[in-house]
Length: 306
Image (cartoon, rainbow, N blue to C red; front, side, top):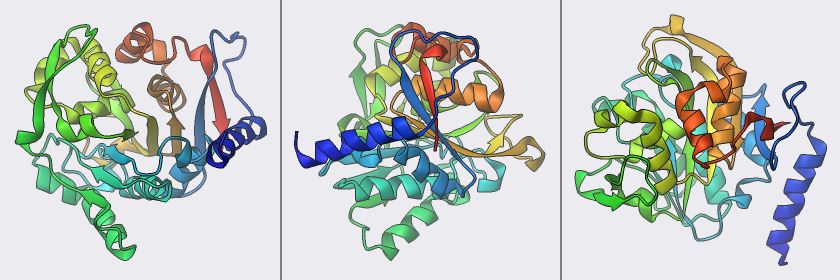
């Protein structure tokens, strides 16, 4: 075991030993335990940093020389206060941690629902990332850019439930690591939109077709393009009229960030803690459990308070 591997394992062990776990009262653990960290009380960016640190730090997920895709929700022409997109400070914090861990390149993009240039500007993400990159002299390594139609490639999906193949974004397929950075919010069709649904942003073609069998399609896309780490922004939460929102009356402060290497565990935890819904009661999270995409029961989750 080299020094880097030793420090990584030691950091994870220390986090697990020093932070209490919280399981459902009266629920016996079923299967191996999966850690989900929760950080609160700080700014959106610092909460994200603390949540990742509780899992051993970004070095536990990103290796030196990696090309990393940081995938936020940037799909809507909405401001940070309207809570329809990932907060820009969370995106910058995650990108910064990737670079500090030795990533060769960090790429940030999303296939938006509203007009892409307006989404990138209104979300505040483009300006925040470019300002950070310029200030720290990492413009070559850290880029936020718009998707290009020519980069969507027809891709087979082995063991698919319904999507045998689909047009997926080449930069996501080619990345060494994907760090999934959604915002937690209500969704009128899927009840909530978190990590699993955020990966629709790497899909080309007519994504509306996927909504006819949404749960199965989300399993297929996430199986083909897996997230190595999911960091969920639950600072300001759109609790009604999602996913687009628009009214500040639909936004409530929760003031937290969550992180896990298991996307299903991350989504199930946030569904319960933020939206008061058991993961098993959200159709696409339940389907992901049944399909072996992550945990198979919420009783497997160990919640770490960072």
